[in-house]
Image (cartoon, rainbow, N blue to C red; front, side, top):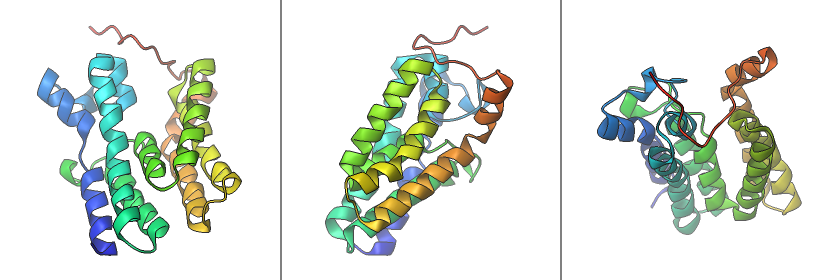
Length: 202
């Protein structure tokens, strides 16, 4: 398998809008027109609970993990191929081909999957950071931003290659950029806290 092939595979898999597809299939609704309008797991979980939210989390993680892991196993140099394929999956999640390149998700779960494929200790440590911050503040956005910032820090601590550290920096910047609206709402005091039970809907 060539370098270009795994990158293309990563983008196509990342472009699978699981949150949109599952809600459309099960509830016959367009997730982009409900709640925050985001196709990611947080919006799906808020609106429909864990029955749909949990599968979207798993699928969004897998679409980052699978291309990164495949590239690590079969393409050289492995770490560079892994982050290129995983980065393409994140790009696909943000601007999915199968939604006409319209706005997709904020790449957090997919990014986690990429790091599970290329730097598992970074992924596990950042996951602990995410869960800890989330349980304290109950803002998924804050947990995502803090966990994203921790990625390059853990990559350095665990001694991963420079390519992984730089990818961690790029991923952290991407997560910050994609959460800029959340940051504005946090400053204004209007950001919604997350609840595990689905939100009541009219």
